[in-house]
Image 1 (tube, rainbow, N blue to C red):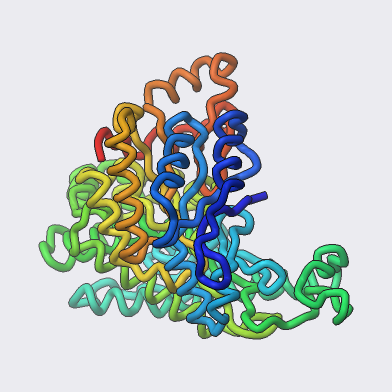
Image 2: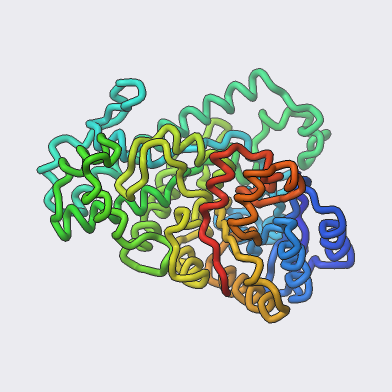
Length: 451
């Protein structure tokens, strides 16, 4: 469950009130992982409300998450929703925006995008099954420029997105035929008057099928590596890179070092950020051409939950320097763990270059060392950082305020740290109850020591 507070009312006036503050007070008085609390930020949101929310995070509550009224409302109005209804959005699940009684997200395909690059470079064959599932790269010598390679890959990515959407459409058809929801249906707009199960109704904006890319930042960094070391520097060939990937980099350490040293997303470097912007634009464009089983088109979204862990376990080595089975990047606009080295402002500037308004959700995790939020001045700086991010296209951001040393101690002595709560994706959890792989992923996120 996700309780949404703040933002604006349908008439555009500020929605913050005494209950907003009481819920934040309750969160600090009784911190637990559930229920999730999300604060909508509008231009009218009082700074003292944001400040109180940040105090809860500094205390270790790991919430609320922060979402941008501007970006979510823009998403809905782009799809023909009235401004009054769009202003009434709430969070469902983790951070997918929906309008109570007016929209419904049912099937969310967790799509492991780096696997498409692996299959493409393996002549269309899935190495796990041995089946040819997509068109392949063919002769690597045919690609004379990066643009040639990118176009061929994107054509295959589009085919893969359509396959993923087909799977989600089948899920929806089965839900409609086998799993009616009479209670939920009654709470939709005119539900008791119309008398139809909500699976059998059409709404003004259909978002029953959303397509979600997982590990997109790994793909971004991988394509940047291919562009730089194969096509521009010509340090080695595509065929040699494929050999290195097939060997999980063993014996090809020099090639891996070259790939790792290529600029990475999250550092305000246009070279790689432009690839991120283009891939997300392309994902949204292709997704919105696909018919959804309940009517309308499929909708792009961007959440990961914990799918980047099993997704990574399925992926072979990738050209960004990642090893076979290593966890994928968390979130959807978060940098890959430890790859953002130019500070939090640079990280947010990279994310601002992506058209996040096109997506129903976009997940951005950020971790601060406790010393970075000691003073009121620190909280003011972070308040301003959030406002600038949201005024320049950011959709969502959430914070962990904990140092890696504490997390490692909790791994070693879980009984002593049973109440330690961390933000994982669009939800919080007791750290010691996470799998070791997910614990390591949270630990390995970049730890900013200053605003």
